[in-house]
Image (cartoon, rainbow, N blue to C red; front, side, top):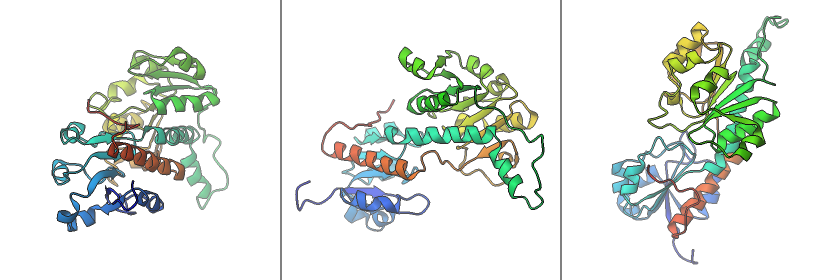
Length: 329
C-alpha cells in the first residue's frame, strides 16, 4: 500500500454483538482495511458499493446471496472465519468472479481440544457431577455415580483431516486405541505416529469404538451420516461426540437412541438449528452434554483466524496465490 493510497474497503456484519467481529480485532483490521459494517453499507449503499473489495464473514454473517454480490461491483474476495463452507453457495460466488478463502490452519488445534474436552466431560460425567456438588442437600456422592474409563478405550474418528489428526495426537496421550475412517487413507508414517488403524468401511469403526468422534464437513454426502442404522451398530456403552456440523447426525434418531439405551451418551458442540428450541428433547436428557459451538472460541484461535483472513484477502487483492483458497466443487 503506497503512502496516501486509500485502504481497500472490507465489509463486515458488525463490530461486537452476536454476529460481529471481535472488538479486540478492530485495530488490527483497520491497519489494512477501511472497515464498513452492513448497517453503514445499507444506509449509504450508493457511496460505498464501489469501495468494498472484500468481505470478512464472522459466524456466517453477513449472509452472502445474489443481491449482495450484485451490489458490490468491485468485490474480489470473501474470507470465512472457519473451515466449514456449508453456509455458502461457492458456485454462485465464483460466478461473480469472487475468490473464496477459509481458515483451516487457525482452527484445528482449538477444535481438537474441544473434542477431547467433550469426550472427557461425558466419560466422567462432569456436568452431572457439578450439579451434584452444588446441590443444596449434597452430603456425599452416591457410590454408583460412575463414569467410564478413557485410558485404554477405543476411539473411532470419522474424518481424519487436520482436526481429526490432532484429535488422534491427543488421544494417543490417553493411551487410546485409535481407529479412523476417511475418504482417503493417511500415509503409513502418519498412521504409525499416532498408532491409528484405518477402517475402509465406516461400519467396522462403529461396531468397535467406545467413543465415536465426528469431524467431517457437512456436504450432501455427509448429511445425516450418523443415523438410526449407524447408532444401532455402535456399542450400547459407546459415546457419540460431534464437533463437525449438527446435520451430520440425525438428531431425531439420536434422541431415541439415547432414551432407549442404544448408545450410552452423546456430547455435542453442534446441533441443528443452533441454538436448539428450548423445548427440544435433547436438552432434557441427562446423558447428553451440549455446548454452544465453542470449537474455535479461544483468544488465540480467533486472533489466528483473523490473521489468516487478512493474509488471504491481501493476497487476493494483490494478485498473489491465496494460502487458503477454496474452489467450488
